[in-house]
Amino acid sequence: MGRPTRIKALQTGSRGLTTNTLLALILGLPILAGVAGIILPAFGYLPALGGSRVTLDHFAELAGQPHILRSALTGVVAGLATTCTVVAIVGTFLAGFAGTPIFSRIQHLVSPLLAVPHAAAAFALAFLVAPSGFVIRLVSPELTGFTRPPQWLVPNDPLALSMVAGLITKEAPFLFLIALAALSQLPLRQSRQLTAALGYGRLSGFLVSLWPALYRQMRLAVFAVLVYSVSVVDVAIILGPQLPATLPVRIAQWAADDDLRARFLASAAALLQLAVVLAAVVIWLLIERIGRFVLARLTYSGRRLRNDAVPRLISAFAMAACAALIFVGIAILGVWSIAGLWQFPDAWPAKLTPQAWLRTLPQLWPALRTTIALALSSASLALFLAVLLLHRNGRASGTGHRLLYLPLLLPEISFVFGLQILIVAAGLKPAFGSVLAVHFLFVLPYVLLSLAAPWRELDPRFERIAAGFGKSALQTLLTVRLPLLLRACLTAFAVGFSVSVSLYLPTLLIGAGRLTTIATEAVALSSGGDRRVIGIHALVQASLPFLVFLIASLAPQLLFRKRRAMRT
Image (cartoon, helix red, strand yellow):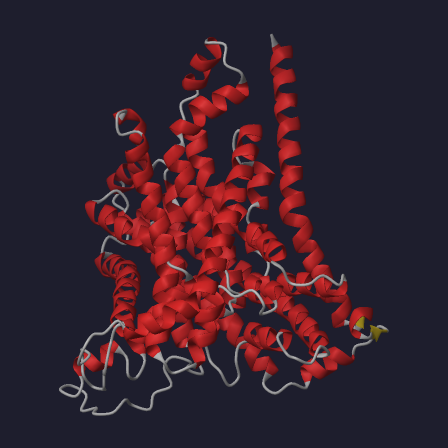
């Protein structure tokens, strides 16, 4: 009786190993090659650019750059502040409201924010909080006395507070949705009843009973938030400090320098960025230890902490504010794009006109066409491979599940820049194919993670019935599983599409400026003063994912309009 079971286990393990190996080849090799691509140039060896001997001169040159230490420290502090705040907001909100009607309402409000690209969200926040932004206009001059914009350095403040606010606004929804998936696997109702019977408040009961298991499941996503926040480029260009800029922004500037010798300096800085990210991870591990110690003391002290209304309300307000800031900001972007004369401190433009759209759209079309082509191609390829991997393995789990986070756990400025150097060293020219390959590298993990849960949850009896009718595995996949999972497949495709639309740095570095997308054009305009053109670019970038998500939502209704059970 035991032998068939052992044989089946061995076969399953073999399939899993093959799938994990394939994932390692697809995700791991390009990343390792990219990291290797910055190590030798950092030490001066890159014959294609005239570097033929190993030297430490480029690290000395990097150390001599003005305010380089401050640039590095700003990123570390901003990343840690963002991650701590996001974890606190999401954890407190889950503990205080999971399973309640307020929780469902805010969940529906926050979920669409995943489709908003980082750059568009940063522009939305900047248009609200700038000295001549919408918030100041609403209260001026009646409450502030300002008849001219105040001389405030917001955004781009030296302490990077605007950048941290922008990152929190965008990363809180991401971590919230990751936590939701993990929370569904925990006994929330039973745990809440037990801790309530023991006299615990909602927050303290959740902390001592469910938080350790929940955090363990979302820990990789927390590290992804930390690494992204420490090494972000596009949000830092729009909202971050300028004099000095953060280290990733300075690396991007050196990498785009006309003087090819600056690539050596950029490589040394990219290696420093790796060390900075590693330092941030080590600090976070220390914060985790402190958190575990505090939680253990709280548990053994027996304190019930029943009066937790204030932190619960703050967390609910913070989650709702994340959504409100982005939605209101995007609406203001729309108003700016059609605004005629809009002088400060007027709260509304004197007239509305489509002139800016008519003037900008013809110039926007090449970038828009490239953006759509890259997003459609990378999301389609990623969905095709995700279906093959899940069909082969059944689900993304174990080592394979961790491998999915690999592109998110390394600073993209480091390994993407390394890939750019390898492309230059190989004599290859920037082309659509090379940019598509790098987009695919970032899109695949999100598509696979989106599709894995619905793939696992589909009732296996459908396939057993199909097998009973003599259908092969391929026929069952094409005629049973994929039609039943059509909505999930389209949603995963939309997630991949939105990820590709938001990619700035990979497009900029691998495309070498010859391949422009809406993201690269929008960020490039951030230093300009024409808010109408910026608003149009940001609005178009935010609209593309919304449009694809809308199609993904409506398509099953149209395709299965005569089969009601297939529409869900």
